[in-house]
Length: 119
Image (cartoon, rainbow, N blue to C red; front, side, top):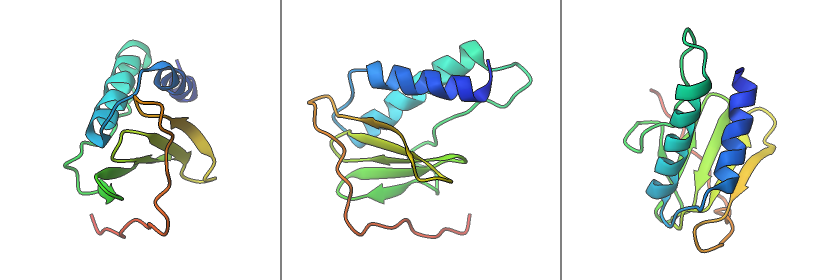
């Protein structure tokens, strides 16, 4: 299965999931979903897509207890309550928006900008 089809499957599975109540829980949910899809559908000779660990230098705090996780083609924003927004890095279009476990929608942190990192 090609990368775009795997990303679409990830988007569908994330939308179907129950959601989480914390930023770390939401990150772990996405990581587990993506790992499962990559293990089953990625070509054996292709590097598998992953969600960065919370401890990686590129991951930043987003608002109160939230997370910002930049990836090669997408940006992941997670509120402290577990609500998620993923947008396309190049077009800024929303790839997926996911409510938290309590049905609370993602809320943008006004004026927030990522720190420029030298990694």
